[in-house]
Image (cartoon, rainbow, N blue to C red; front, side, top):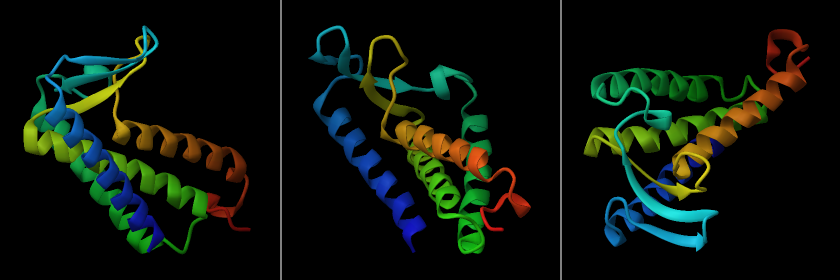
Amino acid sequence: MIYLAIILGVMVLDRAVKIYISSSMEPGGTIPVIENIFHITYIRNEGAAFSMLQGHPLLLIIFPAVVLCIGIIFILVKKNDFNRVFMTSLSLIVGGGLGNLTDRMAQGYVVDMFDFRVFPVFNVADIAVCVGCGLLMLYMVRYSGTENGNGRK
């Protein structure tokens, strides 16, 4: 199924980049790609987005785990009932969420590396979640007037 492949693809790419960064750099190390604009910076983020909820590891594991389980069940059960854009967006969000949750459960922190110097450092999983949320917003704008909001008339 394509949606499970999206989830797995996001997780594999995210894990590969995180393994490469954590095995080739020291925490806090930075490599300028475009000086003062874009760097690869190895950060261990113990909080959620923008380091929020730092110091609450149980909350950062239990809540996302429950939400991600609901998302996976929804994808498996409703895969044919909703528009592809909606299901793709949900798959990207779940894949990214699982990528970061895996880090948090195994290490107690999430590995971040993409540093644009004017924005918090982020990773592949974060990109997938943001792209998924963007697609979800487009879906909502496009299909908000259809019956049941499922993209089908």
